[in-house]
Image (cartoon, rainbow, N blue to C red):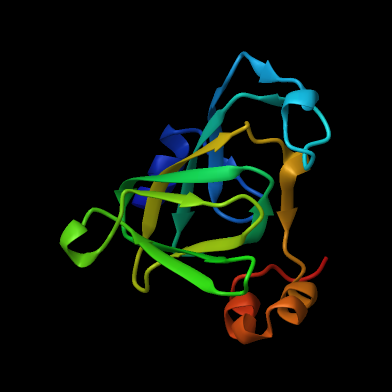
Length: 170
């Protein structure tokens, strides 16, 4: 039996993402920023901006990872999800995304560059479709999946969360 999530994946032509879930790039600016105009953390020119569709289903999560750019998540459809990130001081930020504003859910979340972050559906959720916008634009050179042991060593206060939302070592 095809699930609603499977149908959305098919209709939007989404592909598996290395961090978990499914994605498809929907926009990449035709203009770029030269490396001399970017902060030192970038090693080459970048598109001005990029955007993707991103879907999490009941069998996936977005594993802890970080980017060199800020990333804005836009909630579109489905069940609520929780986005969590570890700030440079080791504190944890947790935001629930969805359409229930009266319950504190948000349609947009900005994850700061360099923060380790993860996302997953709320318990019992079946799927959620979001969009992600990155500026300067996304490049896999700027994407880093967390190593469980290293992230726990740096943030032992979040060990259970890190172990739950990191991928096994390959």
